Amino acid sequence: MDEAVEKTGGAVRRRPARERLLRAAAHRFYADGVSATGIDTITDQAGVAKKSLYNNFASKAELVQAYLEGRHEEWLGLYRARLERAQDARGRVLAVFDAYVDHAEFEYEQGFRGCGLLNVAAELPAGDEGRAVVRRYKEDVEALLVKHLEELLPGRPEQVHVTAEHLSFLLEGATVRAGLEGGSSRIRQARVLAAELLEQL
Image (cartoon, rainbow, N blue to C red; front, side, top):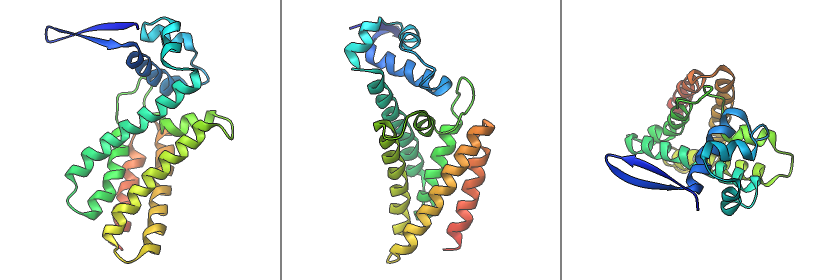
């Protein structure tokens, strides 16, 4: 397996080819799109042989799936960090919005281009498994909103689900606009609107 040697504080750490390929794919898929990114581009940026890619991933489609999983896990890490700082149920709902802001404010090569998951889904044909994966991840986010709203609105299941759907639409719509504008301001504005809505419950 190809490996890279990385020096950290005098110590030498070997980074496996799979990790390097995933990093390169994440970088290029987000910056340029899946269709525009060829296997050669990924292997060149990762510094590995093409054979190494196929030793780790059966196909480009499998690499795309791994990218989607990694992107969602990256967001979940941001969400968990925000959740730890939340003081109450309202704060836990808003932690979902804060994690979207944090993701939008990463230092991307070409600036923020919107949700990486939806960007990939937009390139895939109807019925592609990648689109189903993105849908599941988006449903996971809405389920988090439901969970925190259940704490905020005990015994009111109908209002919980309606509110979660409204907040999900607000969040995803704001993220699309933020991607078009290349910054997090629309998501920040959506957070303000969400906070105002929660105060009225």
